[in-house]
Structure formats: C-alpha cells, structure tokens
Length: 278
Image 1: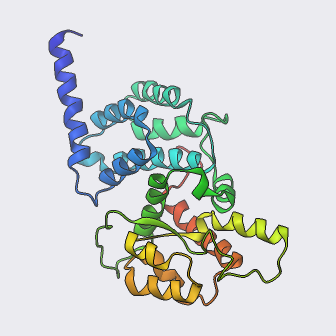
Image 2: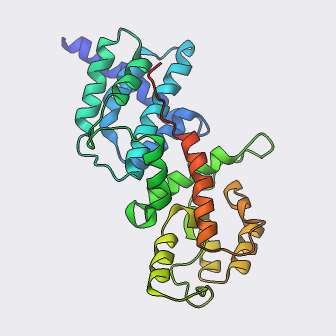
Image 3: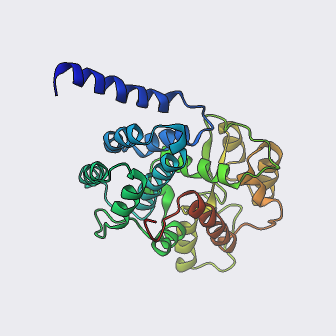
C-alpha cells in the first residue's frame, strides 16, 4: 500500500471514529463508546473500525448494533466474573482475522468467534456463571467507581419504559451504599455473631446494596437509618432505579439478595449471550 492509499485509509477510519464521537448521547453507538471508555479496552478499536467500514450503510444498522452488543456483553460479563484482560490483544486480533475471512458477514463471524473461545483467558461467560458472579461478588471492592457507575447507569436505562420521561442521565452521579459500610449504629443485627457480621459485610459490598444518587444527597443520607434514607432518596431522586424502594419498609440481607436478582435480570437483558451464532 502506497502513501496515497495509507492516507485514504486513515481518512476513512477517521470518519468512522468521528461518527462514534458525534453520535447523539442517547444512540446505542454513543452508549457503547461511553461504556467502553469506562472499561478502558481500547484494543478493540482496530477491529471495530474495520467492522464499521464493512457494515457502515444505513441498511446494516441491525448488524452494527448486534456487533456492539456482543462485544459489550463479552467485556462486561468477563469483568463481572473476574476474568483476565491480558489476552484481549490476541482476542481482537483473532476477531479481525475472522472478519477479514467472513466476506461481509462480520456480525455472524464476530459472534461465532467469541462463542468459540473456551479458556479462562478468552471465554464468554454464560448466564449461569454471570448470575453467580453478579449476585455474590463484592463488586464495590473489585471494580473502579467509573465501571460501577457504568453498570448502574446501564441498568437504569434498561429499567425505563415508554411511560417514563426519557431524560438524560445527570452527570456526576455517585455510588451509594443503601445499608452503609458503618452500619452498627442504626442497623443492628437480629442475632449478633461473627458469622452474621461477616455475611453482612459481604452483602454490603454487593451489587444489590448499591445505587446511584447525586453527591449532595449521598452526603446527606450517609449512615442514617433506612426509613429516613429511603424517604430522602424517593423525595430527591428521579431515577427509575430508585423507585424500587417504595414498598420496602426494612432493608436487610434478604432484600439485598432479592434486589441483586432483580438487577441481574436487567443486566442479562442489557448484556445477553446468545447460545448460537445464528
């Protein structure tokens, strides 16, 4: 390839990348870029630029969105399951090679390739593995705040329906523990024991105990009792994610577990894993 061809290729892929950046913030492409930025996985962009060059026409929209959802699901599920990122350069190089051989069927080749990986360094976790990790991992301690916000914001958008005002998510939302990390004053254990304290401390760091609020509200509710915290959240938060608390009069490990399961169902919808490449 000569200099003229190199410049042409740079211009072409630059136009694709600019399209990502200039998409309306509610578009799926824009959401994908924001989530990938939080995941800090830039090694996928050479493959993605090639894929969009191949399926960049309006008629290819469904295939483009399928590619984005599959890539995002692959990365999010692996993050939740605590699987390594060290092999991603090889994974996305393999994806690129598969796409080059696919003769235009990039979406199908992407899904087939990802489903075909079966080692801890590259597999796409199935629903059972995803569910167990989602419900049990001390996720607040394991991933960055940016990634945790990304997860909760994605669930917030998924929980909305046609009856909701589709307002943009406010910037600067913070992650709040519903049962606080310093729970001893207002959240006594029914039966005190070392095992009960350990179970509570583990539950506190799980996804079922976490939500999003503004920084001023976060500071105001802090370590207060549940009824006061719930009422303040319902009074000041417009998020669909927080309307789940209206009918809950007591917040404990049972409610945390139930909410983790409810959030998993939403997460499984945002980041599905197909069983076949068809």
